[in-house]
Length: 216
Image 1 (cartoon, rainbow, N blue to C red):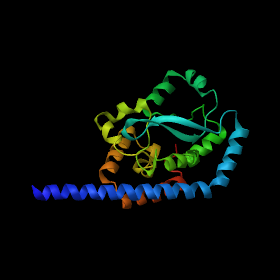
Image 2 (image 1 turned 90 degrees about the horizontal axis):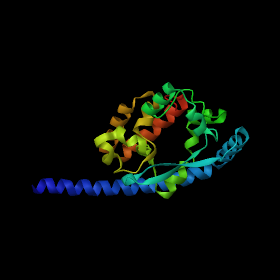
Image 3 (image 1 turned 90 degrees about the vertical axis):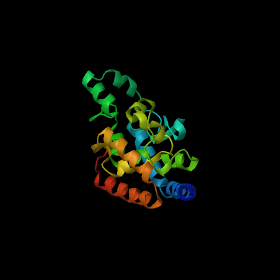
Image 4 (image 1 turned 45 degrees about the vertical axis):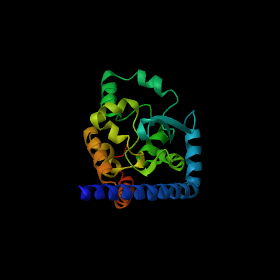
């Protein structure tokens, strides 16, 4: 009994240490990233402005730690009237979207938006979310409210950690995987979180993006 209690205390201390190191790493990495990538931010902003009407960056409401609403920043990749375009989708298109929360050859996506999504550059503004502490470099991707049912009994577990810019799912197939596989990958990450696993995920994400594997 004493042995078990000691193990619990040790795990708790290790978890606290991991979270502190993770937050320090997140803040420094995000700050450096914003500074170094500022020229790319400027170029993308100009391209978006020239490509179509609408804001350059928008905040998409998603679920963060403890299931609270957070605004996840992204470069705009859709036309300003995307809701109107969605209403004109065929029943088959809507069914595909509601099942996977994505659509192949989505007509709402702009020309520059397609490139930004394939290269994941649309997610660069989330470095500011990381500075704020709403997100981490590595963690399960933040989901919209409609996706909660996909996680079922695992929803509370998902909301027990800070969502990430990248995660085990992105590093292992991204949109080439089914949603059920995504849930399994998120749960695996939560159960096995560590600095070494985070570093492996960051490295594998870079490789996947460069190779355009499972690009969204």
